[in-house]
Amino acid sequence: MDEISQQPQVNLEQQLSPNTRRSFGFSSLRIKKRINSEDGGFTRRRGLRSFSSTRESSRKESVPEDDGDSQLSGGEKHMMKTGEQPKGNIITDVSEKHGAIPSVEDDGRQGALKRFSAMWSSLRKGKRDRVKEPELTEPSGMEAAENTTRQHRYASGQYFFEYLVVVSLKKAKDSNTYEPQITYQFPKRDGMARSQKEEEEKTLKAITLFCFPEGINWAPLTEYHSETFSFVLTEIDGSRRNGYCRRLLPGGRGARPPEAYCIISTLACFGLFSKIFDEVEKRRQISMAMIYPFMQKLREAPFPAPGNTVEIKSFIPESGTEIISLTRPLDSWLEHVNFATLFDCLTDQQVLLVFAAAVLERRIVFIADELGTLSQVIHAVAALLYPFTWQHTFISIVPEILIDVVMAPTPYLLGVQKRLLDQVTDQTDLLVVDLSEDKKDPFIVSIGDEGSILPSKLQAEILEALSKRQNASVGEELNRVVSEAFLQFFVKTVGHYASYVKYGRAGERGVFDKRSFYKAIEPKVTRHFVKKFIQTQMFDLFIQEVEQQQPGPQQGVFHKKILEYQEKKKKEKTKKH
Image 1: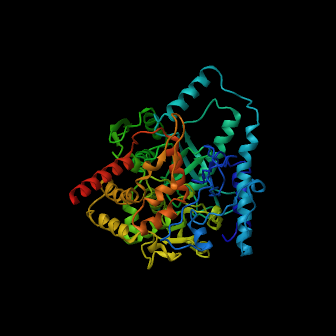
Image 2: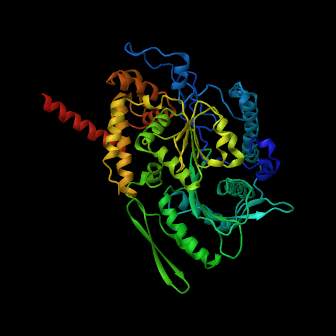
Image 3: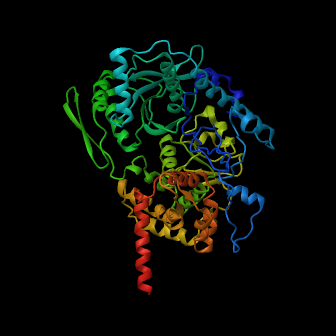
């Protein structure tokens, strides 16, 4: 698919309708934005700007130039700004207000960007139009009360999932193409207002794109290797819902297309939902009706705390009552991550180069044949950035119909199937990472400076920490070793940030003293790296959240590691004296 316009049978408007855009972005297309106030400060509100990763300057204070640091050219300074972020809004339906689409040298690329902009505008338009639409049918009495209770229970994390859907491929009339359609949904949503029901239908329709991102070109199969993967839907208010998918060949004889099970949940725990899929698949082989009682039991069960287990009783004909145990990992912030796949595909040194590019918020595309490999690797790379959070475009598996997203000039983490590689490698100023087993060099396209981004001493320390993991390390132990190695990097480079957040009178927000923070960093090579890193959006928003907090001891794994490191440095200093 060279261009969307060349594939009328996959026309997005036909598949999704102009109002498909609910309040989510395809996968994670959320950008948090600071808005300048008249006095040079900023408000705390965060809004959505589709495919715009623009950081507008919120303070007049610039990063101080150290006499010992070399002056940077305009191009180098531009590259330091959060992965080459331009100051205009790149792809948006409000370009007249925030800036027009920038010129692109290649006419074809510009045309694709305009088409994608128009497509994205049509997807967002529906949400704005529906805001003014009167709700004609409101649930009344007990139905309304039950809906409120359910929403509260789910929002508070008491439900494992929002709903389960089965997506099947249905052959189109007078065509050899297949269209993904939802053939089963649990639970059914009753008593919703018309506008709510329409929004849910649009959401479910969009989910079919991620369950079958390859598009409509399918053929009946007699064998199909089951695969599990995930994606993310990001709401306009910043909240996230996770989609967990398992594709397999349904029961029956002869050639038939695969089908997908998809669970939508606000909870991020890939391993736990993989086990749930095992149970769903087991029951599907008996009868679709067997899925309902199991999912009902699961929906009524409380979501366990980190390190705890919940047991689900379920009856299966000829097997009797079974007890299924579901256990959450102790480190809950890593429960959606499996670092094993990342390190199976890349060496330690190669992972370090990918990490370096991600830290500076550059454009990164991962290439693989398997959907599970793409989703696991891209989530693992994002987890390496903890305690910071990737703030830009994040699509673990790009549907074929949205492949033009690779032309967006703003930072992104994308997963693309290998058969679409030719539509990615014609891009420049990005990192394309091949995760295939038969690869010669994993870096198909690179800028070339990835090896010099991080201070060499800290690079060596990360590699040394990674080498200490045993070859047999799996699961939580592997996650612990890997996360510890990269967490220490941030502890040593920016872990002193809290000392430079100054508070005034009680109730006032703190103010980060960027100049003093930067000047305190030694040695010079580390200061040079931090000079670039503090201009990223992930650091900017991290500090913004800190400024909003009240003064006092901070909580969390990162702050615990900072205290341990500071205590260690004090002891070393005492020994020297």
